[in-house]
Length: 450
Image 1 (cartoon, rainbow, N blue to C red):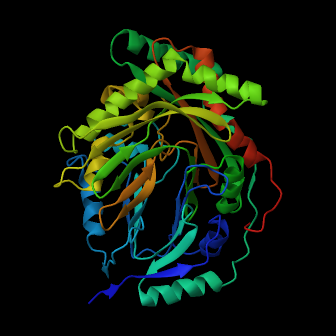
Image 2: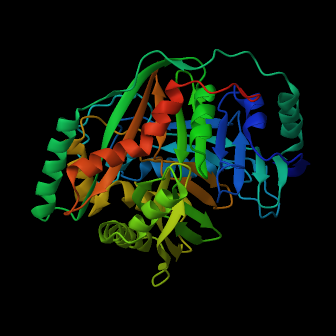
């Protein structure tokens, strides 16, 4: 007989950091972070630890059944032993974790020839039977757990946090390729576009640096530098994912599906006038709008594979959204999930997100595999949750650091189209992550949550 979940009110905090710091060293600790109070747009924080089970999909696994990892995760989700109350909270137990970009090679005919530089599983999800949820719109917080779990969690929250080793880089970030190497690959992309292989290809470059100390401290630095509404932190053993993503991938609630692709970027200005000019240049850019519309069309097709016929809509096209360091053009695509489809089937149908591949997706992914020297790992994959009631929210893991055996990896990329210019695109890849590298290299004033 299973124990029913209970929803216990907790003191509301404007940020999840202090609460998560007390759980950080628990097995399987995970934070899905709305970036509040600094970041606009986010609503919920979800914190948990000590999963009942952890499921990993290892790199280079069988390609016989393309959706086997998602089917296995669905089977795990259905084993969750709890009675769920009636509630509008986003998460009442289920899966939390990540799905790497490289997992997409199992879904499509991609050769998977790029070298792996981070030895993380292709996906890693835990089955969680409790969570702390903060709602920043209602300014309320709750602990969702069985009575026995509730007592455990409250004890963990009241226990002193163990001492940790401060984070610092032990060497500078170094690029995987030179500017000239990037431009040669840019020229190869232009050749493929002119030949008609693709309309758009997302090309990225990687930077890596050695580090020591606690990755949680590194995440705090990154969060202060660039708070975003779809951030997340997961770390285990000597590996971890530190994501400061501004981009939602797939959100599903009661069968209603939404995706919010980002295409088109400008840096923030140093003055109000310069900032407004950069925003105006982005919103009036024919190139950036065309790039965004291409990805909207791709995502309409992906959603159409599992959504009710005729239900896919585009309620927002190329709207300006501004973050701490960049302006973006963001569109919204919606649909209604077919009644015989699950959120994990939706994830498999649309994975990886079209905004970080190009169009057509399969050919773009093949070209990315050919031209990028190393595999992307979790970068351009997704972080998020799948709730036991069939709710899901996932991000696109851009602005994301991947930690593995004492090395941090960061990627910057951008969508290339026929009228892209190599020098400008190279600069844009740096604009997107320069502030992250600077934040990690320069210690900030210590905060209480560290």
